[in-house]
Image (tube, rainbow, N blue to C red; front, side, top):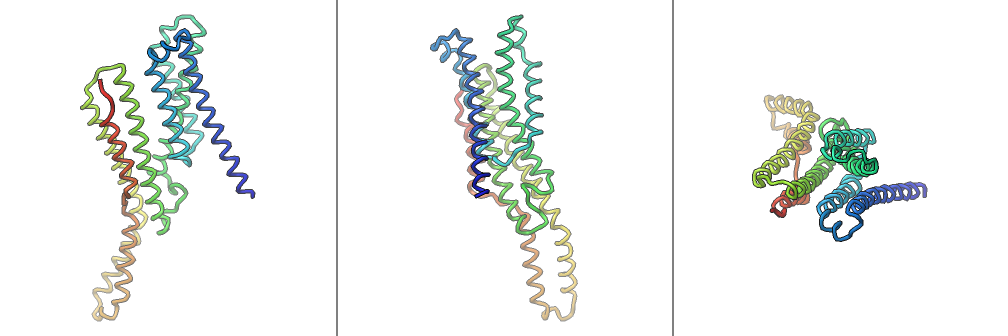
Length: 284
């Protein structure tokens, strides 16, 4: 009964967080409507790109935070990402110079970049937590890599999270390309190849980094097994040690298998579907 109450409270908190994000973005769109002079036709035509970017970014953040990576939370990284984005958007944007001394315009502008900072802060939080879990955390996602069963589970957990993470960033990349395509002319083929290379390179580097961590956990055991095997093979009557040899060989194979990263079909689906999205983006 107590566990049911905790789950119910957690679900209510998630619903309230989602609702808060939706309300913030709706206020963003409302400010754009005010800026259009409350003319619906102008709002839907002149600001169509702004509406698209804000709506898609909201959907990506909600899907990433609450569905793809519900356990990747760190309030410190969230605050750091929020204030970092707020400072960068405030001091490196060209738009404030055009606002003059109209304080209402300044308020609208600061609210708009404040909402963007919240969304960027959530993206930064997810990114920081996932990279920490894969590359640095001694117990990634609470799993002890010194234990065989938890190493096997960690392999599945990390490959699942990492493939979704790459898919999430492919979607963000598509959103960024859509924004660039609306306002700038650029070499689409070159940027597409660079982005695909960065995505694949990041994926392989992270997989290799975690596999090396797994190997470091079993290297000492493999060395001991190899020494024992060598000692047995050098004995004169090795045929009487056949059972022990088979046991050591099987044990070594299991240890080696627990360090190899195997991508399942759903992992490959997330990876290649994310890359496929780049290929179907609309272009000018």
